[in-house]
Image 1: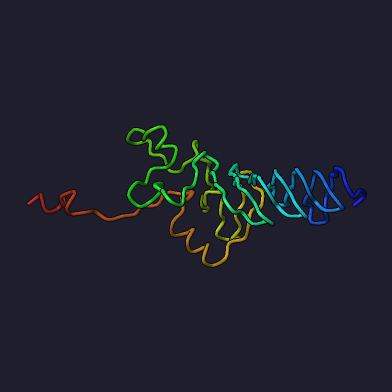
Image 2: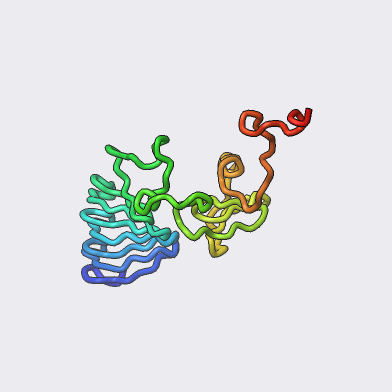
Length: 192
């Protein structure tokens, strides 16, 4: 580092960036640290580690605000991009009994025929033969997840691939078939 005490703005070979105070050539004081993923930590450092109050701001809009000691979060709270805060002691969202999205708990359910298929509305258009995985679009042929703007997010392993094709929203419609005899009488039997 060019200075032993003061302020610096330095980009590292990993493409991470530190902008803030230094003391005795160590990252120390108030600063902003940006990771290559786009996640940004804004808060206090001591001896090169998160220490004191600080907030991790994630690229998707979520955040984790905590009190840190020597790089370890001692007391913190995670807030999802839609404003829902995680509470480990009293978590009532998505618990098996209430399947509403968080926005539905805030603004109510949509009328019949206009079901909300994901928390963020309006929904993104899913290309045919692809899946919406929540943080982007999954192509099962290339096994790549891209964000909704087409930028690479990750490669899916075998377990994630299986989960996606079994559970996620598809970019196509399909006939799920069958006639339930309890709900609709068989017309061929009524003609006799």
